[in-house]
Image (cartoon, rainbow, N blue to C red; front, side, top):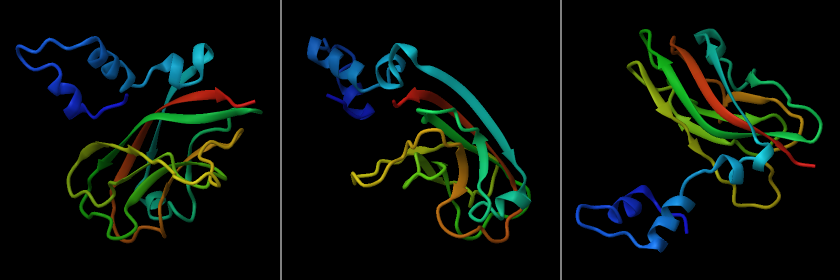
Length: 172
């Protein structure tokens, strides 16, 4: 069973003797590249993209591509992502929910309210789970893009850098 880090840490406090089941919970709670990202043929890669402030101001209108389309019957699955705000003088005012989304997908794979930062900082973007069967997050042969959830941000003058670790998964 998958458990939170708080629950898992409670199994391993000083003097505890974790059970076999608790070790199994620990293992099941973490991503396994062979089991969870495309099996033994998993193709795990990394990408990063520096987005200048002028392009940040148009991220909804003009999303920025971080990973090109992988090819027929292949989808991009985000494993982990981070957003780095390189703060200049003004935070972005509205529409600050950064998202990583596959082109033509019905929902983002990761998102985080990061553009309103007022200092330099790197933040881990949270996976987004969509609870409806009519929406896909992993359409095949589509690029991975950086966008914002709603309209374009206003004001703001900081560049951002986005880091992504992803798998290329055969969905045929």
